[in-house]
Image (cartoon, rainbow, N blue to C red; front, side):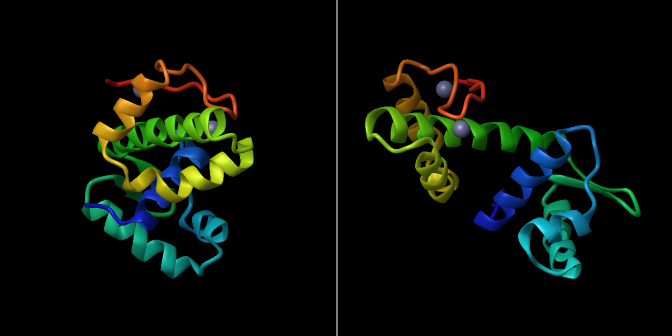
Length: 134
Ligand SMILES: [Zn+2]
Ligand SMILES: [Zn+2]
């Protein structure tokens, strides 16, 4: 099981490096406004859990398991954004912020049901494509 913070680390590694490029722990520390040893200890936890691969002096990247996790989390995040924006009338920014607070906590059943209720949207309000694995 992952923690909420670990899920934010995985998203950040994905955003910074996509799936092929390595990201330096110091870069991640900078983005989270923490010292590098702090980011390294969280990254080590993610390595142990099998979501991240670390190459000394090169950096980290997502494993296959890590990228599958991120794809599922992004589906939740973007479907929630659609709901908040299209149905509840949140602005794009508000929808992104609110979704970032809750995406980690909702089940696949919830996000997939919500997705179908919204007619399987193709794009989130920010314009990113939504990939549907269900
Ligand atoms: Zn979005
Ligand atoms: Zn979907």
